[in-house]
Length: 254
Image 1 (cartoon, one colour):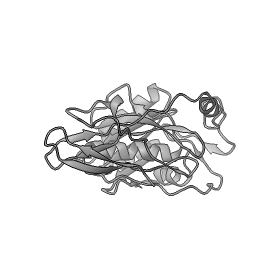
Image 2 (cartoon, rainbow, N blue to C red):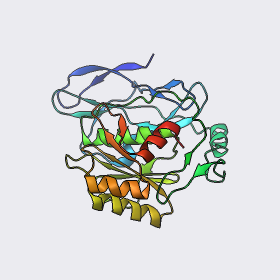
Image 3 (cartoon, rainbow, N blue to C red):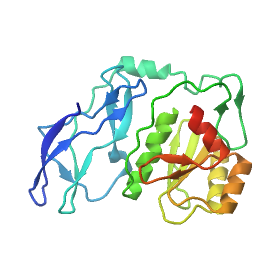
Image 4 (cartoon, helix red, strand yellow):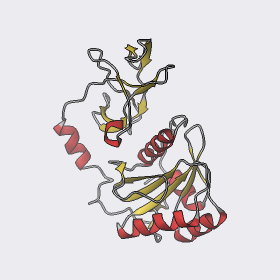
């Protein structure tokens, strides 16, 4: 069962009982951040990308992954950042992740297809995977979090904010992939798709696009030509594939 603790809002002094969320580890076990009952919650005045993620260790396999920093919205309008304890560095875990079969030094498996700007998609039968556990989308930040969780579920590691800011939305980067998340109410345009593809090509990376409002017809046609997976984010936080490259990626992961 996830931890819970009382949290007092520093603005209105209202007290809440906060339960830590659980996330699925790659091994299948649920993991939750360790709450720091000796510290007090702080008000979030503005979001900084590096402060929105914390390292959480799985008690089942000792793997460490990055997950969203726990936050709570108070009815008074204040967003509270919940204090957590940080896991100590684990040299054994680091060595295990360094030997991860998805590392950059491992050659792609036989039968892997490589399309221009497309993700590597193994053509063999996909191995069984745990179900994706989404987060409900209420804000633009939730949309970015949902896309980051989905990329991790696909098998990408070390997800971070992209170095280059896209023309619209938010850019995410991981080992071997560049993703764009568009949380606006306008469908992604042809220019959006082409800019993402060109940026990915300059970085010798694959790319994928997540949109909350869908895609214009020309954008979908160009993405199909370039082999770019397109996903629509529904409000449950589950990315829905809208073209064949996205169907393949969703089915097999990386």
